[in-house]
Image (tube, rainbow, N blue to C red; front, side):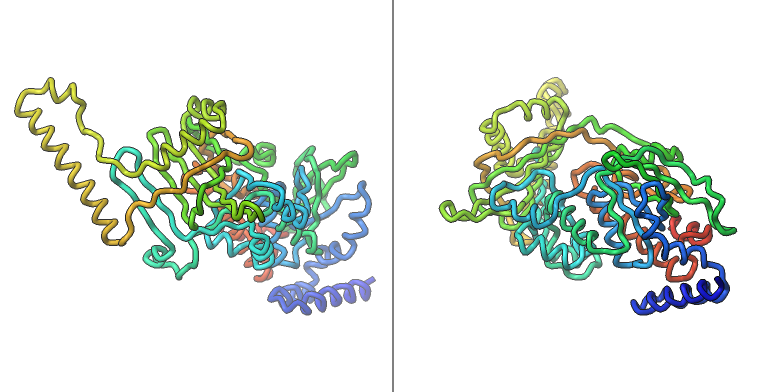
Length: 481
């Protein structure tokens, strides 16, 4: 038995060394001290155990939620820490990337899309990004214009402005990518990763701390998850559970040790895809209305043999629930007229500081002073705006006309939610499970992807240092970071 044990561990070390990973030295030290035999040998027999639905499978990391953030978390772990066994559970099974990408010839863009920063795009890796770009499912933008509806204030910035805030020169400001092709292409990468187990379509039945006593000293009990796929119920154990299952996270609520603060913005977003009369020229537009901002974001264009290039964009309009309900009830033609009326209107003069009633009711010296103050305010605001345009050699850009609404109009309530802590016993929250924000600046998914990158980086650090995430030392070091 001793010889079998030693030979098994030597084979594992040789296999890991063949990947030239820094973790090799740490594992070899653990082997010599005979401290981690249980962890290593369990991986050797795991594949046989997984064949039976009655057996309890063991994973180093389990991620619940296979959307953009959860699938990216699994993808980053497969690349950065390939020694770990990772399970990804989701209630749906995304289509194959080739099936989604081939649909482009017969469909319009989907309104469910994300504006990703250059840093977030880098996290996707060359394979995913090249597939999306090669099939023209990425709409890059290198300029953005933002302006007020009731004043002369306007901002116009480009990729060159990123240099002034200390970052290296980027070729773009960002890109808009639809949810379905993004997730499908990431899942295609996961399907090829031997250390990733995709469990879908799965519904979770129970999450509890494992009652098993079969763990070495200094190792906390793993978390036990009962789930069902079709008619088959199974159980798995995991050393680390990561919740990436959205704002209404089942995992966060079930674990019960993640207090949150939340607030209703009393706003509702309406988003839909529109057809444009001309190219948007890689520019994103956003106008601030009294009830909330309306954005016009570039998405991919379609080439038609008879009609030429068909240009599309997505509208994201944040407003009151009453106006949102009205927008969703309007005909497509009325929506086109209303949106064009807003986006075709540029900056205006500063609104009056005092109402006409106040000025007429005030005594003579005060009414004249009010008029003088308003004139001064108007001159300053307009002068600052005009000087900015002159300095940049860039005036106001009128967005392209919208000619048609295509596809469905989606509406959703806007809420702020933030978990007071992101980590608990053997568990962590990422993405919308940890925080939700207003879509105004397009930061929701970018923050979630940053969560995945940060957590992966810290897990990689503790694994390569030799602590690992199985013992309390590594766990306590990795997650609070």
